[in-house]
Length: 353
Ligand code: GN1
Ligand code: MG
Image (cartoon, rainbow, N blue to C red; front, side, top):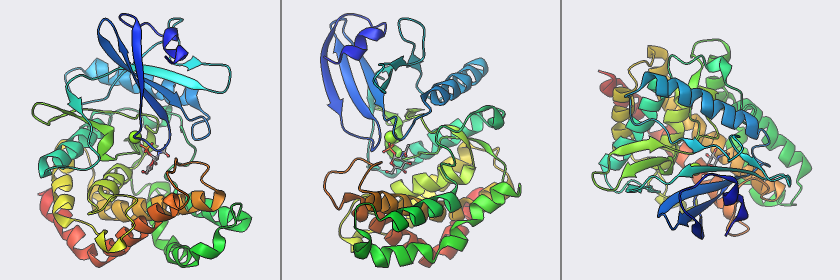
């Protein structure tokens, strides 16, 4: 048993603990008690998230806001405080632990098994953003500084190149050239945030389909999970990251790049769900959605590439080339989006009604 569970109030006595391998960053356990009750215990990766207090403060602030509004679902999961009333348990060894009740009869999918799954994912993130559209975003802290500041990600990539800590630079010249050529376009979204063309709002920032729980019975969205990156951001980040991951025809680490492309049908399905669920989007925000998809894809590729150069410090990997494989799929997907640019824009125009 993970002893950290005893720091939290649970129903019954913990009887089993099983690691769930899903996210790339935190470590997650499913705890079962003899009540019976089930819980999710998470060890926050403090290398990625040194600012645990900010995460939990943000989560508490938006939970209060959503609870005060009532009614509007699906929203988000809620955490359970420790026995001594804290939002997370500091184990004194640099570990930060938190707990939430397992959502029974829910499923979490890595890929949409039908259009409806992806539509529900869009609705969940669209509703989340919409329900928080009147929350003063500037009151939230940045859980990871400049998380989707793409020009900053390019600077980090250049630092990783300069340091070449893992000695892998010679093997990535082609990928590096691809991404660096795109720096100017990849910086536009951030410019539009800086100059106020796009409003800063509360965003989730990690909108992979596996960060939504679906009901096992009817596959409708129940809530969004993985709230560590909830902070001020752009609507285009959430739309874009969901497309990057969920509207790709291949897995994020597919080795055969011929299999990687943007599924325009899924792009439309997501656009429809997101626009329906988030009527508060401005015209400029809606216009920025295709750029968001492309930018999040290039940015994510640059992060995988930088981490590969650093020796896989940030993302969990299953084999030495894993981050490079991931970077390559992202660049292949971005290249395909460039070919499909006009169609992406047309679909957004058709779906905005
Ligand atoms: C990470 O933890 P997970 O797997 O939900 C990452 C995202 C990346 C994603 C790529 C905090 O998400 O930003 O887009 O991997 N989360 C963090 O799969 O860096
Ligand atoms: Mg996740």
